[in-house]
Image (tube, rainbow, N blue to C red):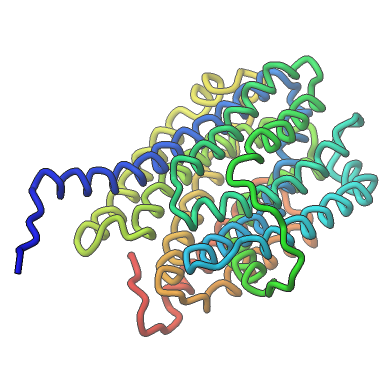
Length: 391
């Protein structure tokens, strides 16, 4: 028998290729977050305080509906990874997308004045963007399931970069131009990983299950700006800008969550990631609390500086969300979704108390942070046989 000889150089080449494929996706993810943040910085400077607050409220609604897109992408990726077709999920993408688009058009006469959104020609573009987002999720799910990280990265970058480029082109249209940029960017990323729909029955429960799991996190991050826009529209722009600054803490911490959740590290390295995330959060929080006005003025403009009054509460909320995110991802890594309902219930309690009591903005943020912290603590207290829980 001949011995199979594998040279050290080939092993190194194989390992390097495998790492590079995922490294491209990780780097693209960082770039996408940067481009999305740049879009918000540019729109904040190009819009009035009130219009930027209204845009944040509309994007909050967009983020809430994005839980369905996350559900579609995740379930499609799982099915494709097992060798199944993505075409049945593509059908659900069209069905859910059209349904959400129609609902957005029909109800915009109610939610637009309620959130103090400006009049204009944005409603149809927003509805189409919702529909495209659901269809696009299936395409990305197929690319993820087939581990085509380069194409998936290109799709994400086309979306994020398209928003920036199209805002530059449409900025003179104001609020309408920002929504058109959202739609145009989604269309730009649509051709990547195209999946023709197959009109056959595919269970929708897995999609809704993942959507429910994500709602416990996204609800806290997306519903605060609509509340401020509805109850205190004159301060919505400065609140939205401050929320974006404080959100940097959660954004950077979520990178550590991703490394921990995907198993990129193990054992002591995973604990080190958690400790590093909290150390970085503490350092970042200290800087934001020490120089809130200067940072907001530098990133956005002096018009949004009054929002510095909300910085302590928003920094606390970011910490509570990072705490909750680690707790939920620890369970998801072991396919344990027992805490999902608790996280969603915490969002519902927060929203219900806020609207029922008519809380002031700082009170609303404090209650959100308290609910998120309690939900995060509960994820650690619930019994489980397999969960590896970061402290």
